Image (cartoon, rainbow, N blue to C red):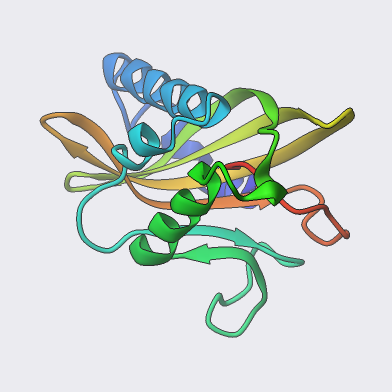
Length: 176
């Protein structure tokens, strides 16, 4: 993602992509999405996604890989993401209980490109997790494809690049 920001720098960082009001709406939207994930509000989080084709992707090993040939930690379309939400909400799924306590910070929100009613946005995050006495800190970057609608922004695509996606990791029992 750093490469994308560097490549988009002249226009993106000079303020030529978004006006200040839209930038603030964008940052509030991403903060709201983070709060819904931290509070395990899965149905409300799913309401932030656009209609039609969507993609939620966490690449493994190489952030720039071709998802059709590479390995992914998560590679969900709408149907598989809905199934994931059902498992996370299932109170009898012992692998997901107790729920992790989560808090995340979103920063460096940079619009990369605007095309029609869609916006490509990059950001960084730090996510603290504690579950059954074990604390983890996750670092990463996200690239979103957002659609602007009368109801606000909607997520069409979310790519989450964990800093340690080339290391062994525990079962992710929460949304990243």
